[in-house]
Image (cartoon, rainbow, N blue to C red; front, side, top):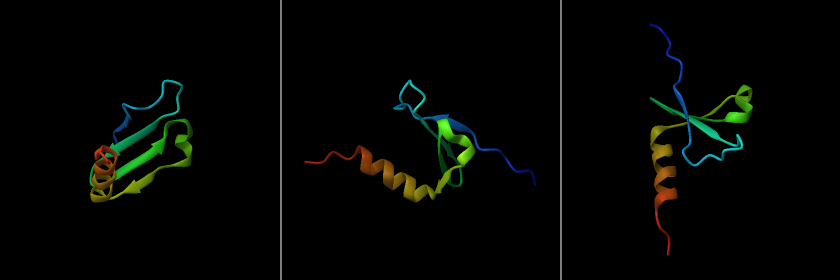
Length: 61
């Protein structure tokens, strides 16, 4: 069995000055700071990531 490398993509809301986050989605969701890739990533379950995104897109009164 071969291990697949994560496919990273930058957030569409990231700033042009390099202050970005990158996300790799698969069986879990990995998040890292583009400017500090060597520091690693933070893993999230797909359920936790979906809940986070829902919270960001939910309009509040």
